[in-house]
Amino acid sequence: MLNEFKGKTAVITGAGSGFGLEVARIAAARGMSLVLVDVQQNALDAARAELEAAGAPVLAQRVDVSSAEQMTALAEAVVARFGAPHFVFNNAGVGSGGLIWENSLKDWEWVLGVNLWGVIHGVRLFTPMMLTAAKADPTWRGHIVNTASMAGLLTPPNMGVYNVTKHAVVALTETLYQDLRLVTDQIGASVLCPYFVATGIHQSDRNRPLGMADEKPTASQLINQAMTGKAVTSGKVTAVQVANKVFAALEADQFYVFSHPHALGNVQTRMEDVLQMRNPTDPFAERPEVGEKLRAALRAG
Image (cartoon, rainbow, N blue to C red; front, side):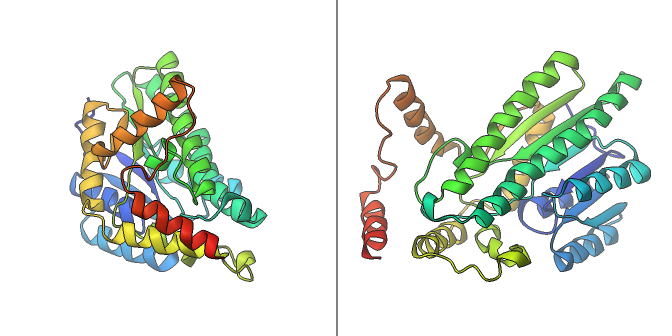
C-alpha cells in the first residue's frame, strides 16, 4: 500500500490543466516534489507559480511528449534534480474525432504521438531508473499511472483515431503491470480510464502542431467536436474527483481506475459481443435519438 507520499517525487505530464493539474495539487498538499510537464507554456507557468507558492519543490519543463529527444532530456533533468521519481503520471493527451478514413496523416501522427508515444516514452525512460532505485533499497516504492480513457475499452463511432490510441494505452499498461510483477514487488502500475469529465480535452486544437495550421476540419470532425464538447462540459464528475480516485488507487494498489463505474455495463456488452462472436452492439441502443441525430448529420453532408 502506497500511503506515504511526503518527500517523494512525482512526474506529471499534461500538468498544466485538467487531471494533471489536480494530481499536482494533491501531490503538493501531501508534501511531494513535483516535475510539471506540459506543452502549453502559459499553463505550465501558472501551474508552477501556484504550486511553488504552496511550498512544493518544482521542476517545470515545456515538453512535447511525442518527441523522444525532449522526453530524454526531461528524464535527465529529473534525475539531476530529484533522482529517480517515485511516481510517474503519463497523463498528457489530446482529443480527435471524425470518420476514421477522413483523418489525415498529420492527424494520425499528432494524436498517436501525444496519446501513445508520450506514454511509451514515459514508460521506457522512467521505469528502468525506478527499478534501479528499487533494487538499491528494499524499502523503495514506486508507481506508474497511464491515462487512457473509456474509449480504450469501447469503440465509440466517429472518434477512431482517439480510440486506437487509448486501446493501445490500456494494452501497454496491462502488459506493464504483468511485466513489473515478473521482476519486482516494489513498483506498481495503474490505468486511468475517465469518461466524460470537465477538462479541456475537447479544446485540444489549441495545441495542434504548427504544421497542421493549414488543415481544415472535415464535416464529421466538426460534428464530433460539437458532440464531445457538449458531453465534456456537461459532465457531472470533476477533474478533482478523478484525481482523488487516482490517489485512492495508489494507496490500494488498484490497477483499473474509472471515473464513471456505471459505464462498465457498456464494456461488458462489448466483451460479450467478442465472446459470443456476434456483431458489435449498436452503441446508441440505450439512446437511439443520439444515434439518429448523428447519422442524419453525417449523411446530410
